[in-house]
Image 1: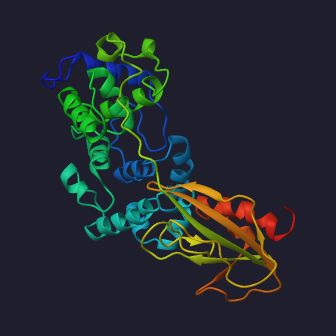
Image 2 (image 1 turned 60 degrees about the horizontal axis):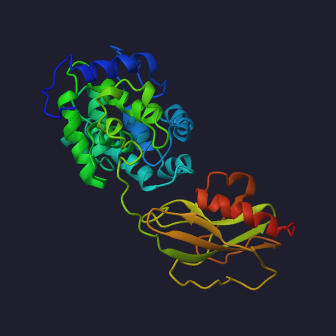
Image 3 (image 1 turned 180 degrees about the vertical axis):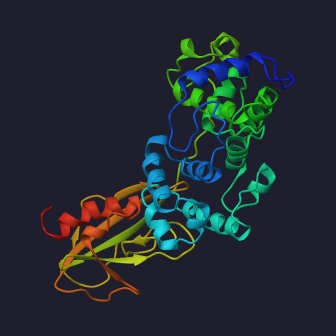
Length: 354
């Protein structure tokens, strides 16, 4: 398929793709129907795209509904309490996204409450990188931008036969698709490519016979569908170790709030030791502690954490770490996933039922 074709309204690939999208588009809560003349709400587009970073559509949908019900506009979000935003984000992971979400909303509010329309202006906002800027520009403002995420990278690698990986692939895919973006429906074109990657051009077992671009696909013609996109070599993640202390007293559990900056910044957590390459298990005070038979293992982007769990039930709340908070056990559901897993292991231990 020629990459250099000038962009035109009726390019065969774009026309076919849009016709397929009109008939098969996913119904998503942040989306306008195909061909809609109603301008999408940039707040909803932005919120969805931030949530979808490192998160599946299925997982993000429930969070999206709850967010827009609680903070229906960017101005409402800008005025939110940071602790409330982080609590509402709990379970989505990558919490820097939530902190940047609030910082971005505040910056937009300070500028009058209106999102900028161009990729360059959008990229100047906190937490908005090249992909998110292109997605907002295309989906919300009809700019001829190509937001290259994993789905688009996979579709482009196969369609154009691009045998490269990583950032080189993303750049090559963006350049290859750019001449095909129709001036009349750039947002629908971008979403059609997203849906094609999610529904048809899947990582494994792609449904080539259902693809509207199958006869143009270089990888299919060359028998390279399974080989593309090329997968970059994986580097093993280093391990870190630590201990979490689950202390229960009269139906309450001891929690701390992590420092505002850094991993899981500003979130409630179980107290415990620092995480390090060779952290040794330790306890904050003597007592009838019980240890979990195996650590809780949790993967972060750059390392794998092995968290030993020690649990105890005491007669009454006490101060054993700085700024300890005693929270009713029935109110700890909003903890980050790591500590939800730790509580699930520790609670039976503290009660002597495991």
